Length: 400
Image 1 (cartoon, rainbow, N blue to C red):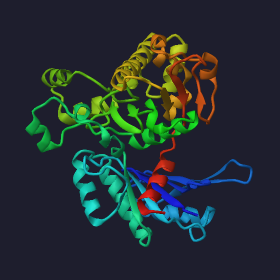
Image 2: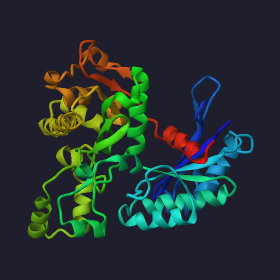
Image 3: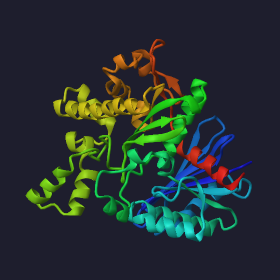
Image 4: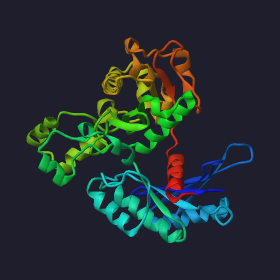
């Protein structure tokens, strides 16, 4: 068996999955509140009935090393045994790879130095990703560790797509360009969509809508990312749960002059107090839809703004691609919210996009078509699996 331990290390959390890409997930878990009091662990394993058995415990996790100790204890107590199911490699999600990392990369001392140096572009993520790598290396010193970068899939963007129209020397000095994010998901979903349609990936032109609390769009041409909505940071693009997405930069100057907001204040407002939360008071799309259905006019405006932005990007990316074979919804909102899918594509019938209302209303964890038989563009829902994609890329990197 080619088993991979997939690690997603945040500043205060550690998510993990033990995966055999051929047979599925052997175990998964989460350690929360790292570095604070009240650490909590949840460990899940498949049970005999085909469901999932979940175990929870309070843990002491002052740092990521302690979080890995708690993970080891959970495997020892609830299984599966790591001695009987040893990982051949550990795959790590790393948010920002800059322009340096274009593929999954075996971790070395130099790679870690680069991840640390790229923390200036992702100060909330890369330091935590690196802490997870180093803690995992201490626990698994005899297997290769592989960094899988969120930005790597978008390194195929052409210069016209990744270049911002600011002073060239200033941009080069400070590495200001579009990097894009959610690349692991966009890669997985675009490939899975091609498999589902039974068509070669190389001939497909696809728009992938990764709609979760964070959200991004990607135009995929023959399996290559050619345009994406997130930019130098995950703030640009679509309206999100708490992020503004696209905004006139002069708005920030106006707020600084009129309200005397500091850079940290601006960061807080745009990343944590905007999006559908700022518009409606609801950060969760399920709550927003419920408010819309209850007749809340403020919620309706927020929902309309959210859908309007998506529809605009779909149209723009259709123009960039020249032709669209498939539009694919994924992630928490994209996979589960029929109202969002319907609103996002409303009015696009003239572009060959015809949604099947009955099919759109079906809830399923399986890939499915939600367009009509005569729709020129296939509209799909394809559940994402970033952990499986990380496991596959990890095995590719180590040649297993």
